Amino acid sequence: MNKKMIIYFSYTGNTKSIAEMIQRELNCDILRIETEVPYSDDYDAVVSQGQDEVNAGYKPKLKPINVDLSKYDTVILGTPVWWYTYAPAINTFITENNLSDKTIIPFITNGGWLGHTVEDIKSATGANVINPISIKFNTSDLSTNIKDIKEWINSLK
Ligand SMILES: Cc1cc2nc3c(=O)[nH]c(=O)nc-3n(C[C@H](O)[C@H](O)[C@H](O)COP(=O)(O)O)c2cc1C
Image 1 (cartoon, rainbow, N blue to C red):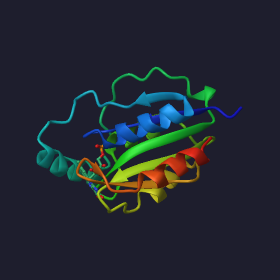
Image 2 (cartoon, helix red, strand yellow):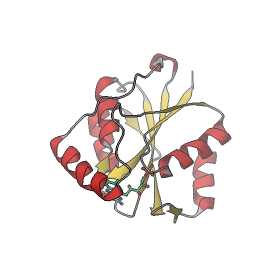
Image 3 (cartoon, rainbow, N blue to C red):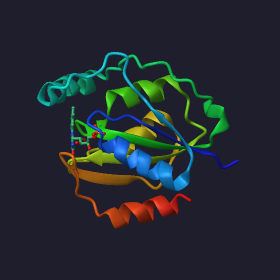
């Protein structure tokens, strides 16, 4: 079995756009994680709220997820960087689901400060974390070379 699934969280849409790019190429299943209480449209307020949530190790309640993870051995996990680590919604997801026997391939969008996101995914999941990519955006404009992203996606085939 070598079945892959894309699972991602996205607040402003950057991680979503990359997730959908990967999905078009790999044609695999895809799941968007969403918090039960949506984040506000006030970006600066969310930046501040996110800092509190990350510092507290907060795990927001997620909308119900209907997926049988046992059918997949590889999770292509997408998150924006929130305060140098993965977003709180990903914190909830990886706490509520045992991924320790999976391979995780992270794609991490950020504004240039990746922090300790990859290491945190490793230590929180105990999974085999391989082939991570950091993808930089300037607000909503992609800064990482699209060719590099396409090469990375091809390496997943
Ligand atoms: C709460 C919050 C915290 C952030 N912290 C960081 C950070 O530590 N480092 C960084 O490079 N970018 C940071 N950013 C920028 C996002 O990681 C970046 O814009 C990302 O691509 C957004 O992805 P999304 O559109 O899928 O939500 C932060 C954004 C938010 C909203």
